Structure formats: structure tokens, C-alpha cells
Image (cartoon, rainbow, N blue to C red; front, side):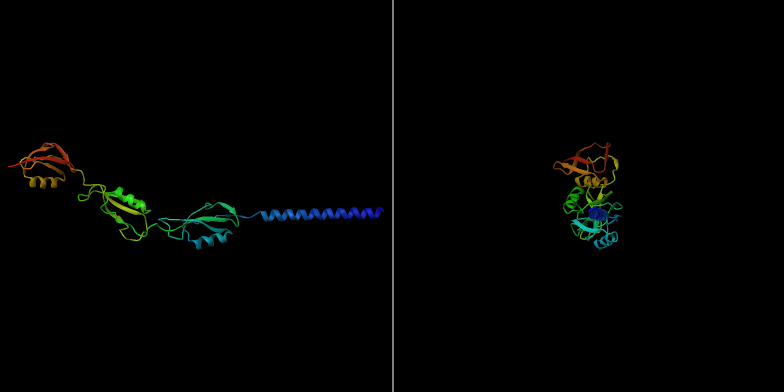
Length: 232
């Protein structure tokens, strides 16, 4: 009887040991499977989808397109942003989400030459364009704040943000106001053009009777001269 009891106890002991070993291996296997090697995330910005996929595959990572957006700088099909920053460490087999460029919203630049800068900005904004740079130059022929030139030129394919050349108006020059009194309307107009000032003429005559500002006072380019005319 004792012998049979000993055999049973030994069997139970071996069975318990076997179960413990199985549980230990199961635990180790679970821990091994649940632990993934971490890798560095490559920089995908500016890469094509093919290039990005190759870079991620080398790291044991996956590529997932999260959305597409219009972009002036990145050509269509190239990556703008990624959810995991470049250089950060993530587990293998993770999917890296990216935003892909749809290219610029429009394919050519509208003409804004001759428009005021505020109008040009509004028109570009409507088309999803940005003004990268505004270059101001003095001009005697173009009104202040009007666009003189643009790059890219109207109709050209967009390859960069738009640069505008905008008038600052003529250089400001200060004069001693000449005497317009006694001059004819034509003579007054010729003198005003030479001084780059504007005329505001009232009266029906052909000869200047009075003026404002007075002769000898300071005036500058762009100012307005008020003339009262009378008949000869």
C-alpha cells in the first residue's frame, strides 16, 4: 500500500513540475512575443512614396497615407509631414502615418500687374497662392502700391512662391513753390508735370488768377496745387 501511495505522490510531483515548466515556457514565450525591437524613425519629409516605403521597410516599419493636402513647395506624391518625428524610436512593425502633397492648388499664376498690392494678395489667397517676397522700388510712372512686375510671370507653371515688384511711387523731392499766377492753363499743366505735382483747377478762364499753396512755400512731389482761373 505504501509503495502504491509513493508512486502516486511521485506521479503528482512530476505532473506538477511538468505543469510549472509548461507555464514557465508559456510566460517566456509571451514575453518574447510581446517585446518588439525599437528602431529609429527615418526622415520622410520631401521623399516620394516609393523612397519612403523603402526607408521604412529597411527599419521594419510600415507606411500609411493619412491624408493629402495642397502644397506649393512639395510636388504631388511627395511627403509633407509624418506623425512620428524623425529620429524618435518606435517598435518594429509600427505604421508611420504621413501627409502627402497634392501639388499646388493652381497650375499657373494669374496676372496681377497693374493691380494694387491688397488686390493682388486677395486674388492669390483665393487661388491658394502665397506671396513670398515683395520688392519695393520707386517709380515715376506707376502709382504707389501698384504691382509693376511679378515672378513667375502670368501663365507660367508654378515652381515657387510668387515674388512681386511693387511701386513706392516717385522719390519725394521738395521744391520752393513756383508762381503759377498769370500762366495759361497749358503752361501750368506743363510746369506741374515737370515738378510731378497734381493740379486741381477751378474756374472757366484760361489764365491763373490765384493759387494755393502760395509762391515760395514748400511743396513736394505728389502734392496738389489748387488753381483759380479767370478770363484774359
